[in-house]
Length: 398
Ligand code: FEO
Image 1 (tube, rainbow, N blue to C red):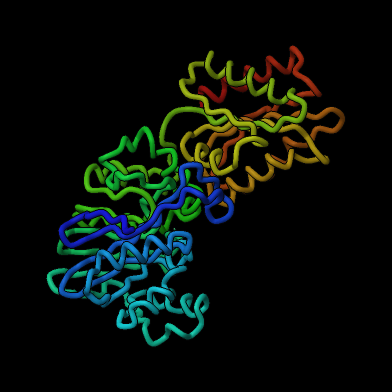
Image 2: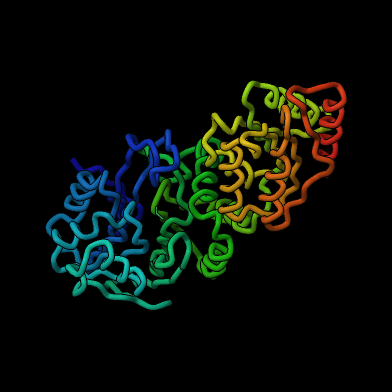
């Protein structure tokens, strides 16, 4: 049975939710599921804006059939060719043989890579600013390369001031009945997932996101329709401000991320002492993670959130602990920059974690490493405890 939601008199959400998938992109845990949004515009012509992941194909085609009624589908707009949205494009084209597909030239090339030549006659590459008039509605296409793939565009419905923003302004989390962001407590219940989604999926591409925000700033947006998560019709500026910060790598709030790699608990003990010392030094917010326990996507998200990091690692195979290396390489891959970092290493006979952590951080942009880097020999001794407390004070005051 269909499950659809009306956004405006002419616009219907026809997407689907997946609460079974463990790992989005086969890498990111999504305990709250994810939604794949698709939108149907009913004008003199009918326009489907993006399709969905194959996991929700059943409900999606039920939704689309119900929302269209007896009308044909005239256009499919593909803002993003990634399979979490476009896996069902080929089937949609098969079901609606008259639908013309509007997409960027790059997306057309990708469509051929994913589906072969079968769709070629249906694909209509559009250029920056090109218009499609569907009756009352005037749609305009704006390219948004690298938000999150190179073929991405966004679609602006000038008539009802709706921006179909592709992955931008999306979030992890299935939509549970309440489609609009103002119907839920977004700051309390969704922001962490929105940040984790942004930082992990698009975080690397700050400059392209800035370019998109610049284009969007010229639009008077009434509805913001992303490909994942709730639709925005109020307080859009609040969410745009978050994107401004994240895409310029500015911390969102005061606080310290403490991430530690511990084998037998001694480095963990040092992290606990460090966190207490941060509190004593006046820090108001500490987020602490064991890198072997928490998926790096959560830790990366808090590394974007806070301006100060403390990384403590045991030495392993004459280097840093593997889970710490994974985290650091992830921070680097996502272009995290402009942070103040405290490092602590532990080693029983040949401590080397500090040197390796320093090497990775030094290859990143504007990472300020506090000196000196304390070395723990197996377990915390009175003198290293004092060094840790000094370092925590330095970080608090930085
Ligand atoms: Fe939701 Fe980049 O796909």
